[in-house]
Image (cartoon, rainbow, N blue to C red; front, side, top):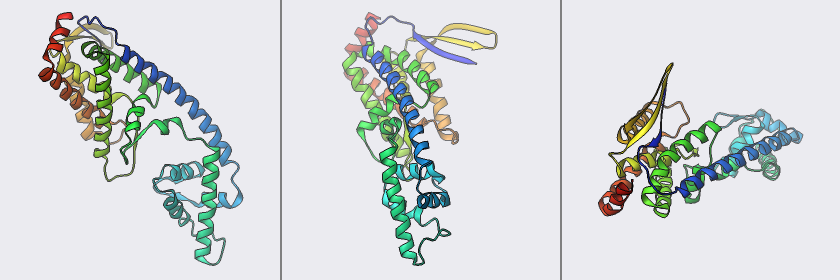
Length: 306
């Protein structure tokens, strides 16, 4: 079964320049991510096949329950850790069956030194993935990453799904508010969804998040608050039954929000950032209410032009 909202049942006589620009940036960013991932895989394979004997012996002995074992997991785990020196010291202590020196302290220092040199060599030969550079990490509030993470995606399916919903609802919001105010709302949604995500996983290990879905959900909710009486055209497919009809935008938004709230509490196995979706919807409703209270004339003009 497929239910896709695809067009607002009103005409808004403006060009959604920022919405289109965001979609283009996301496409270009994802293609750059794909190229970066390919270079990363080649560099990582080349590095792991050329380890010096002592380093290889140490790495082969490591099987950490947090990061796993093997060359890739060990060095990427160290790279992503908040405190590299501490991580190296922990991993060096996990190879008690491998002894280079009779003195335990001297043996530990040697393993730490070998791992440290290996990490330095790893950083030189294996470039960091573009996705990791753009992603937002839950363990610290990086406002630049809160914005850049919205343009990065994990797969073509992830990208196209987010762009579809973002364009359908975001273009309408931009036509109502104008490009400048729409851009400000975009930034506010990107920040609030990231902060909400950090709070939701506080106290646990750092988790990275990417994608436009939180902002797309925010635009859907904001459009509902701005034009609650509007209808939206939907495409419905179920086996051999295909229909096209309109539904109130309020009903569509309520369906998607309730669905994500349910998954937020009960779906603990997927890697979908449901907190970003729910917090984006809350932010969108709050911004829409602010416009209805403090700028009612702007909405009246939009309704008249529609």
